[in-house]
Amino acid sequence: MAITDFLVFSCILTLNAFFCASETALTGASEAAARSRADSGSRRGKLLLKLLADRPRVVTALLIGQNIAGAVLAVYSSRVIDDTLGAQLSPVLSALLAVAVSILLLLVFGEVIPKTLAVRFATPWALFFSGPVFFTTLVFWPVTAVLGVASNGILRLVGKHEEGATVSVDEIQTIAKMGQEMGVIDSMEMEIVQKASVLNETKVRDIMVPRTDIHAIPARLTLAELRQAFKRDLFSRTPVYLGDLDDIIGVLNFKELLRLSPQDEARFKLQDYLHPALFVPEAMSVGVLLTKMRERRTHMAIVIDEYGGTSGLVTFEDIVEVLVGRVEDEYDVTAKLIERRENGLWEVDGRLTLEELEETLGVTLGESEKEGVTTAAGLALKAFGKIPAEGDATTFNKLSLKVTRMRDQRVRRLELRCIEECPAETEGRVEVSDHPLSDESAIMPLPRPQPPTSGSQP
Image (cartoon, rainbow, N blue to C red):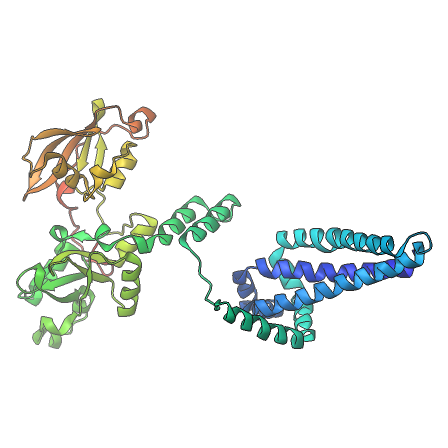
């Protein structure tokens, strides 16, 4: 084989490798990375974004180039073999040998090696060769246009219509898991992604502040009384009601009261400073609620039950806590909701969620035990089957419960013991505390005397 033949083979294989690798790279290229490069002023980044926006047509052009290169290689291989071994081989054997050589060369040098490299370096490859790929699309534009019309017509005949790309929740979680395994996403970011991906499956009732814990003010209060209420409760926003919580007429922002001039104070009317309240049903998903809060530009929503009564309240901070956990500001008073005592005894606040209870103790409650229950107080009510009195005790599945404090028909505090030793005790994950939960923490955190300038009702 002459040096000329070697050069021709090398050029054909190089072109085929370019088409194959570019097709693979464009399929796996990161649009986010391309957009980032484009935003920083990169011409290749902008060109790659243009190619990704019309990916089907670009891939079609590359496939055309790939097939042309393969056909040319087969024809040229046949000619070289005829010139070299034509006298010794029959026409059939010569053709078969040409096909075998073409396939071998294309697979190794035109397919396997280029595509392997393109998969590993998809985005860098796509960025580097964005210019030649764009030129290829221009060269084959007439052919791709005809093929596009023909393929779309066939797809319409068989009932296949173009649909927008969709990504399922499982795909998002899988991608995030792959990122964590590669070290791109840390454990905290992974947890946020997992929680955010199921935001539409979480209901408002699961994160709301219950009606009994809502801090609201009656519309009859004077300006001085309003300011005193805000100083006492330390909430920058609070609902305002007429008769009771089922008749909420709006939301008051404390910062607006701070900016009142003496003239404004003299003619102050509460109704002039009320913002319309956003009312949402208990069954609404948190994802939909977040969208509505953004549309209404509000940080608070009043939750309504199926009978039209107020059942709770949700703030933007509550939604953030779904993703990142408990968020505390300088006015929050930390209150431990569960403490470990001696001899396997646990002191539990009634507001502790079942999720936190299971996580702390290392136990798993059955679905039947948790059905219709979200807090330790609810678990106690389900275990007793009635409203218990202080000192009442019972067993419930794996737990022994004793009510130690009641207030206004609510289970404020209880003692809990695992019938079988809790995993948290055997693993030593929680230290024993000698200090009981304070009465205040069992009811509500005590506020500090300074008024806030920002924040919202938890």
